[in-house]
Image 1 (spheres, rainbow, N blue to C red):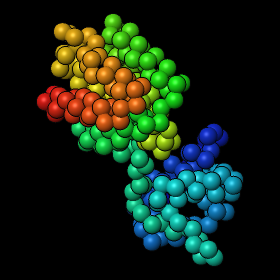
Image 2 (image 1 turned 180 degrees about the vertical axis):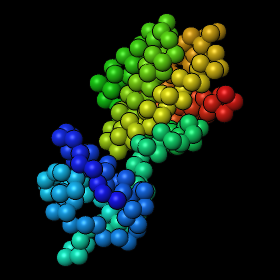
Image 3 (image 1 turned 30 degrees about the horizontal axis):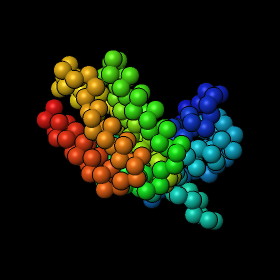
Image 4 (image 1 turned 60 degrees about the horizontal axis):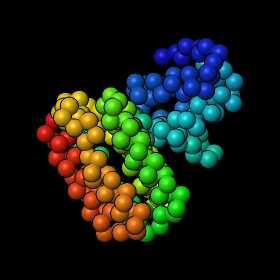
Length: 229
């Protein structure tokens, strides 16, 4: 099967996509040695450096592997999904179960490690959540997530912060849909304000036990609602 030449830009992305199609389409089965860079460059109509970068993209996706002195070989027929992709494909309830594990511990650490600046940020985030009560569901969810992100940030653990950042898009989508379907904000536009205020207060006062307990109860209640909608 001949390879069609690619358009001038963006060359690496297009070249990688053409090569990926050959692999996932079965033209180059697992175990096959790919043609050399010069051959691929001629067929794609690009330079060898572009082919080299495209092969690195495919290696990062888990499709090929270079063997020193032997060449580049196909090692999988389908790309390995990265963490953000897996989260987007996961059920929001599954993401929420992991969120509880992560955030409850983060709240405990936040109460132990928070600084004055963290407390100011938490209070501002709580005020932002309250202000968003007058907005639509999407804006309210964004404000809610911002408050939870402030709690995680106060834990002073960059891994936790990054992990929560990975969860955020899946949480945003799932929570917005849940609010729309459940209609809980029709009766209480600022739903959950009491528990979130208690969470901020517990972190500010350095009460790790109260912070973790309040957050666990709040997240478990939301998880139960997600499972019903």
